[in-house]
Image 1 (cartoon, helix red, strand yellow):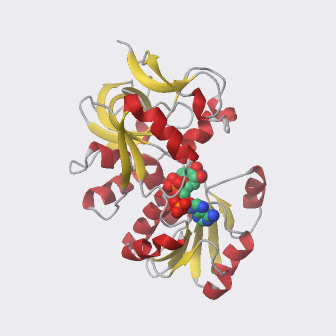
Image 2 (image 1 turned 180 degrees about the vertical axis):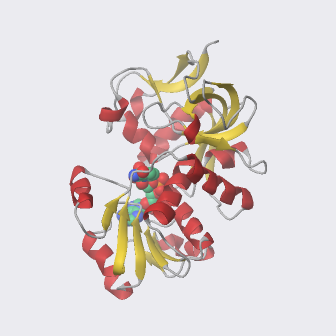
Length: 313
Ligand SMILES: NC(=O)c1ccc[n+]([C@@H]2O[C@H](COP(=O)([O-])OP(=O)(O)OC[C@H]3O[C@@H](n4cnc5c(N)ncnc54)[C@H](OP(=O)(O)O)[C@@H]3O)[C@@H](O)[C@H]2O)c1
């Protein structure tokens, strides 16, 4: 196959290690598809992986591509691929181990790739996979929320928080949450109520929620416990070794590491196709100019007002 372009790095490190370079895309292996990328979306995990925070999974083989979420067109399929065919318009994630979505071409496992709803643009589709998958798994699979129940989302206007709020509301779960004080009206506009500032007093909302979902990893466990109804669950997606230990112990506290499950990405994609899941796009940049935008996003995390999308013509 001909040489393509992607954002990659030759050693773990800060934003300065990213390079826009040629690479040789590989053939899709068994159970994999190769996708011609049309748009890709940035997530905080991208710079954690590049920083070497998950070396156990990402190894020491370089160069490594950057980026997880993408939308594009399937251009080759490996043995055993049954759900997808060449020419399908798809959205998906490359996975922690492989990464490499900020590229003209990416290889991903079929399980992480689903068909794109026809009414979504490439940019809208690329915004979905990681935050949609995590939101579905937090609210439905791990949170087990049912109609009539209540969830509190700490960081309800971030990518995952916003997606989780909309997925919960779709299941007739009432949603309360915290955000930056200046954005409270925006959260109300999504149907979230009450909405409080990040440093809220949990005793004022004591005992009201079946699930407390901490998307920011900053809510003290004591505050989360105060918010819970008896039998409720606390879900945290920002694990540390100490949090994993706590999560393994009996009690309401659980760490969630999202798993690549096509049905969950499909649920989020369907909701986006219907317009019930909306993820705002803050900025769109072409692949050749994406490194400065990624550096800026990483340096100046908040407030972003939506996803950074990278486009490829
Ligand atoms: N375990 C998993 O499987 C998994 C999956 C996906 C994501 N994650 C992790 O989850 C985190 C959130 O991801 P994301 O995509 O939603 O990121 P994001 O879009 O950057 O959102 C982060 C949110 O946290 C808010 N925030 C900032 N400071 C806060 C504070 N002190 N208290 C409460 N909230 C605060 C931000 O608000 P402002 O924008 O107003 O500052 C923003 O709404 C990231 O660390 C990501 O790596 C984990």
